[in-house]
Length: 218
Image 1 (tube, helix red, strand yellow):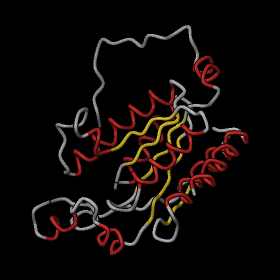
Image 2: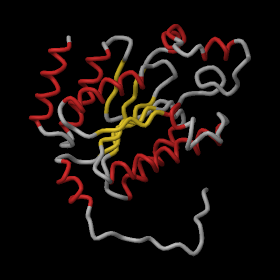
Image 3: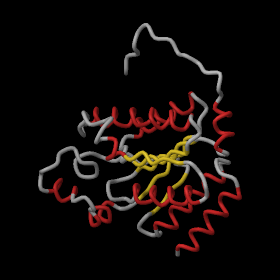
Image 4: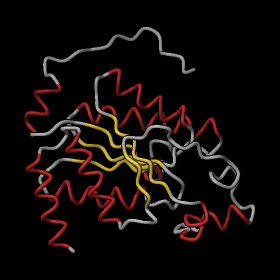
């Protein structure tokens, strides 16, 4: 359990979240893509980002590896460090979503309790949190191995690697399940956009614009 700092007071604002969302013409939310390394989380997030920006929506990708270059650079890959990595990332997502941004977070985040903690952080502020499970068989993810991590893990060069040394705890009730080995990146990205529209994060006109741009690109 994380101890709270003493002698601190929350400072409220005269500007409400609704005021920021009205300026942007959208609702803030976090889309949390979780799955094995090599499942396609980041690639799908990039695709969603292109669709959203192409339809005039403000979004921001929060990539697990990117944060480890800065905010989380002091964390390793032990179970404890992974949990803290997810918690910090969740706090960042919550702040961005409160600002009215649609956040696309892509992290392995292997432990169910850690992901539920991030969900609870969003619930505290009444913010939408959408868990997207990018599911792929281990042998497929290992066959892709875009970063060469599975090879290093098998050779003993990397310890505590999810799928090899650590278990990945599958989401029980994700808002969306994507099987990246049976769908294209474009199809998966559109499914995420559809989810945002279904949850009233995006309007129908936004969705139509996204589909039009995807069709043109294909």
